[in-house]
Every structure is written in C-alpha cells, then in structure tokens.
View 1 (cartoon, rainbow, N blue to C red):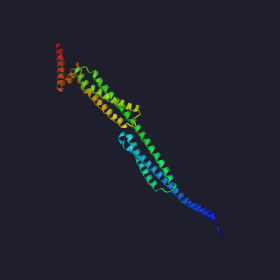
View 2 (cartoon, rainbow, N blue to C red):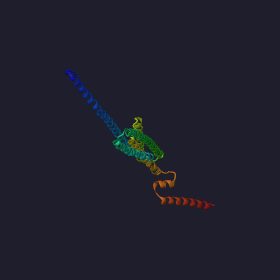
View 3 (tube, one colour):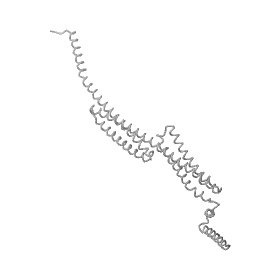
Length: 285
C-alpha cells in the first residue's frame, strides 16, 4: 500500500519530533549529575572559607594577647597571662588543623562535622578574648590600688617632713629643711596625685582596658615619687636634730660639734667645783 505525500510528511515530522524528544531526555541526566557535583563543590568551598575565617580569628586573638605582654606585670596577672597565652596558642594550632581537614573533606557528613567543629572553635576564640579583657580589667584594679597606696605613702612622708619643719626654731635650719626637704617633697606628692588623677580620668572615659600600659606607667611614676618622698622623710631628722637645747651644756656642745673631749672637760670642771665647795664647807666647821 502506497503512502501519500501528505502522510509521509506527517510521519517525517513525528519521527523528527520523537528524535528531538529523545535527545532532550538523554541530555537531562548529565545535567542533573553536573548540578549534584556543583553542590558538593560549593559545600567544600563554604567549609574551607569558614575554616579560614576561624583560623584568622584565632590568630587575631593570639596577637592581641601576645602583643600586650608588657601590660601585665603583677605576680597574679602574669600567672593568668601565661595560662591564657598558652590557650590562645593551642587554639591557633587547632584552627590550622581544621583548615587542612576541610581541604580533604569529601562527604557531606564530614563537612557537617567539620562545620560544627569550626563553630566550636569560634566560640572558644570568643571566650579566650573575653577572658583576656577580664585579666586586663583585674590588672587595672591592682594598678589603681598600687597608685592609691603610693600617694598615701608620699603624703605620710610629707607629714613627717612638715612636722620637722614646724618644730624647728633655728631659722637657718628651718630654711634648709624647706629648701632641701619640704619643697621637694611637696613636688613629689603633687606628682603622685597627678598620676592618680590621670588614671581616674581614664576610668571615667571607660578606656582602662585599652590604656592598661598608661595606667602601669602611672603606677611606676607614683611609686617613684613616693619612694623619693620617703627618702627625704628618713633624712630630715638628721638636719632638724642639730638644733639642740640651749639649757643643756652637754647638748650645746654636741650641737656645736665640740666632741667628747670637750664634754669630758665640762664634766671634770663641774666635779672640781662641787669638790671645792664641799671642802670649804668642811673648813668652816
């Protein structure tokens, strides 16, 4: 049976359509496979970026601590510093290992586990950073207490010097005490109080954690000023004590620097006078 031209054309269209449809159908599986591979690659890239970010955070925290070792100088602070620095160093090593593990992860399960590990290490970095701030804050408290104590020592020493000046009657000695002891002591006390005021200003501005080194330097300066004032107070009596009592011959000789021979001569003379008076009284009887 012959096929008309119109039916041959229709049949050709149907065949062409079927072939085209088959081509599209066969092309779908490779496209789906490509999408699946892309998802795995994207997961790996996301994990790698996350691991690198956590590592960078750990390195940053470690640097914040290691760069400010001079901020912590008290015995208590140094003990805590050694502990937290070791923790930061361990964290950096853990994040470096995480980065390498992320590079080699292939399955979704491994990637999910490493992603959770990255989150945990990030939390650990935050905790170390918070502990470091706490250590700095506690060190500031100790520094401030040290500054307050230094000011008190300086003030007490100034009181001693002032008392020596006030009880001195000899104007020459009084002038010397003022120039060599009292006035310098007042300057040292003023310096210690100034450092105390500087720290108070830093704390009012809530900058103490960022300026721990400045507070430490203020403590050093206040202690130095207090030490110099105490040295002056320990020496002032050597000058004030040279006045003596005008009613005492022995004290006057000591004050004038005549020495032991002169004192003995005075005593011998006094004894001779008493002996002569006693003999004269016996002669009268």
